[in-house]
Image 1 (cartoon, helix red, strand yellow):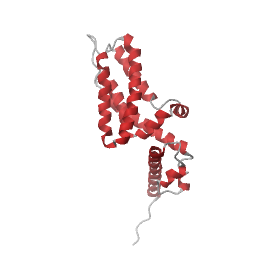
Image 2: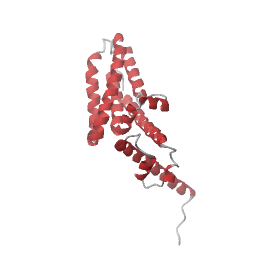
Image 3: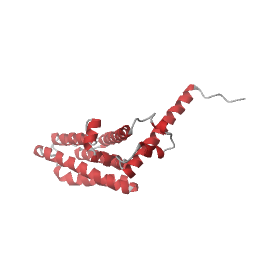
Length: 219
């Protein structure tokens, strides 16, 4: 007795899985090509050669190299948003809140150092593509964290703007250094992200002194 043929739902599931795997293969190949050859020097042919897919299959998913880059950027931002939300939920006070934002940025960078470096070097192009630079989300979160700290009496109001500017500079430059380290030492990337967050917050710690009567932020 012959077995039953797969039903429509099974076939649909297999097609979706196949599409998912093909898209992931293309993005993974593109990331490696960008790392080895740079964005400008990488061609669509280079990317296709890194996969088992036919050239025609590639164009079912992306129209050009720019589309691939946007997809990789959106993946980076998705990871960053996830880390920021998770970190904020577990923060116990304003200093923890700022550390969690740094750690979210550094973890996303350690996860995908190639895309971070490309975005860092092509900030204007990224703003034209996405409406803001790659770190806009993290910077906005840091500004909000500092505003909350000032509102709760953790920092002096006249230091708020200086501290916000300092946090931005630390985030930009330390992320770049972390991306370079993660690119050469991928096995230590997660630990490096934790160490970078601790280092950043230690530099800022003496600016955060809760005044008498203020209450710690509840987790």
